[in-house]
Image: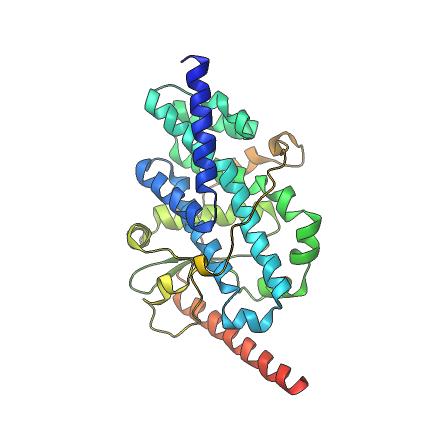
Length: 322
């Protein structure tokens, strides 16, 4: 293929990435549509479900419990954290997915183009191996590892996010009490997933990603979850799946009504894989283990009721002190 044609592909990939990286709704839908076109790229399914959870977390910030427990500034900082991390991941991952799609279309590897999109050298090598060996599970794990390392320094270790979010007492208490959870819903009201622990450690986020992937692709409930993935509407409101549950839980608004477009600075990013502090190959070699407990329906409902109770008590105390 001549240089002009390659430049055309590069331009189209950049345009399509920008068009789909507008907000949480567009990212979630883009991952979903991609997986339905390219089912061998398992990570796109995982990414879409995790992106749904990011949207639901954003919507939570406008629910009665969160507006009672957190002031507007803290809620804004949490929203920016969710938005920035998910924007960064999409800006890195979606060009990779599109380069693969173009490679598949023409029957030749275009992965030498990945550095032009800021993709790590380690991840480029993983794509080259996948092109030859077709090991879907290995690629899935590699993408989990790559994207979690990608956000470690610009988000997790950023002075702004460290000061305003991760070292904040409210955040530490929320993690300690296991209020943060990635949910994988079904149409019959059952909830599967994992609680989020030690989010600041890249190894724990990689472990969480692998556990969620195991639920999606290997658990006996995988067909029920996939059915929801295919047919369940995503608006960002928790009502997307809570309408199937029997217990009354807080309603949250649709994302399109509460958040404006966020402009992101796309600063030149360093290749994380060239830093000696990270060991992606070790994480890639670690055995694939199923989570010990992932049926969360009752546990999840109790946690939400505890959150509602905490908010109610906070309001009562606030009124007395007021």
